[in-house]
Image 1 (cartoon, helix red, strand yellow):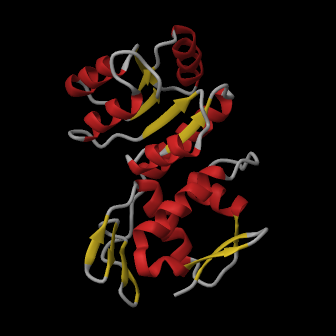
Image 2 (cartoon, helix red, strand yellow):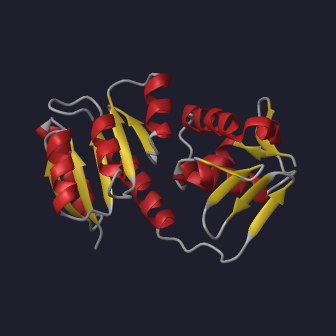
Length: 222
């Protein structure tokens, strides 16, 4: 049984998520602010964290950074705001997903299920994808540009890997969302576009490997 930590200063939100998470078979513990979450993660092990951004004592971004110093736990952020800055900042910290309030509890659980399934999926051993100076080491889940390792979030790596293994194929936004995030597409492609923006920035001179197909999606070209 996976153990989830739900972090939100609103008790009704925590109770709602607990109800649906326990229905899915998860064990749930709660924290009312970021500082309490940091302490709980220091003293206990969790398989997943659902965390609000705007909280007293310590905000969700700061709490996530502190937790990630010692624990590699998948994190889904909740926010009442949908600004691009919040999404980009969260993904730069390495969070796995971002959901804007108000949200559908059923969709939230679908996202949690998908992330947990992907995070526990085995990766091929001793396999590298080489495109000139761009190297994707699938066994170590690392990416190198001209011999230098670049920092990518887990979801950023998954997105690049999926694009690269489908080199030359036009991939719709719906296809990328379904295959990389693992849940049905609900019409909001901002999460995908934000990850593409961060990915291109990280790839530097290889940014043009990711080609935008207007009105369709993206294609990877070596």
